[in-house]
Length: 243
Image (cartoon, rainbow, N blue to C red; front, side, top):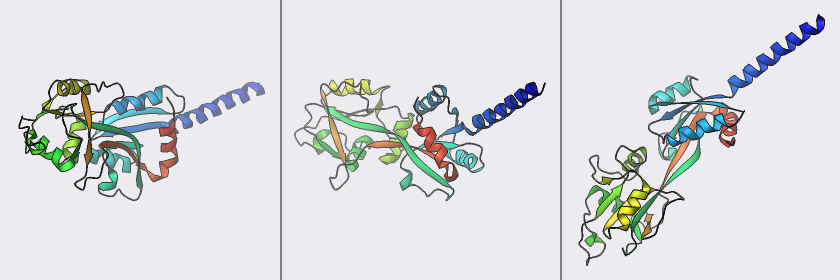
């Protein structure tokens, strides 16, 4: 009888420990302000394919998400953009970059253009430069612009990054492959797309983006997580967890 009591007590103790571990390793994540939904899948896969963490991901706007983080109603908030350039976070919070979306600028392989200043790309996309004559006096053919849909989160980031007009016009396509196909078939086209290892670059070439002093600059969209500083060890452990 004493042995049975000990077993019951030990099992109850294990249940309490297991429950505590499960609670401590459950991550409530908020995907804020249109951060790419692909990262929601990454985080859920991270939870499903390992025994360390459980993960739930919901959508909310940035202001509401940050309030929930401050109120301990979530563990971390996913945001996109360079947080070093934005308003400082409260001292109790920190952030860490966990992924990057790289963009490419492409033109037809016969286009003599090799580099574009960010101010020039802005004017092309805003329609202030509507033909290639600005870059090559012998070519006055109209520029055809191809890029992502205006409501795509990546292009919304580009609108802010490039300081584009609110009513900017272009011809959106659904995928980087479609953008490449259109640029490949049109010597006067220029496109912006998301970089992918599977893309076929035959018939096109990449253009380097520079600042106004001619210095090469990366054309990336950082993805960050914001978290409470006291949770740094747990957050970093979660981010390092393999699928």
